[in-house]
Image (cartoon, rainbow, N blue to C red; front, side, top):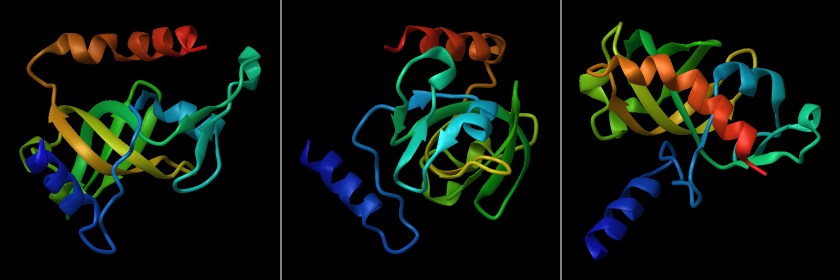
Length: 151
């Protein structure tokens, strides 16, 4: 337990480029949801749900999935079923490098930096999901189901 806390502390306080680790679970979102409905700024993003008559969701961290389109220099551009998004800081996340090949289908957990014109995350975690095509085919449905059932 102490080792995990030390690893978290060293990662989250690793200098000016380090990302502060979120304290709540990430919300699954699509790029289009962030582009159209996110309000706020770094560290204080909210996903508006006014169209459904519900209050906004506080987005301390998000979970996104997509296909790597391009990668280099610790950054990547991905595409999910709704559009493109970018991720940076991949050189600092476990398993980030092996996943950084165009065509790989990956999960990204991260902290939102910007939402327009294209969402950009600071990576916290990256995992290759390419081995099971069910991940990709079910992603949009998972996100839809989650947002339909969050109060």
